[in-house]
Length: 104
Image (cartoon, rainbow, N blue to C red; front, side):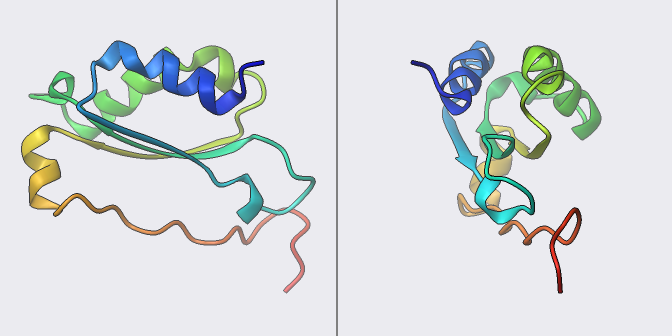
């Protein structure tokens, strides 16, 4: 059986990434635990010459079926190989969810 994470990883291989990390962050969000919140780190030459909006749109297009269904949120960190080197191969940590049924 393919998990949502497996499907996302398989579909994003279309970008021919040199680095890809799909992190299921559903446990950090309020409500019942589902496979619905993901953090994606993708490093690909396919992003060369594209602004952030165009990069996001390309990922949204590839994952259109999942976004119309079980995937509720994506945190996207999309880099060219050169940009990835500048970040020292690191991305910001994701915050805990503050919405939904979470009680403070």
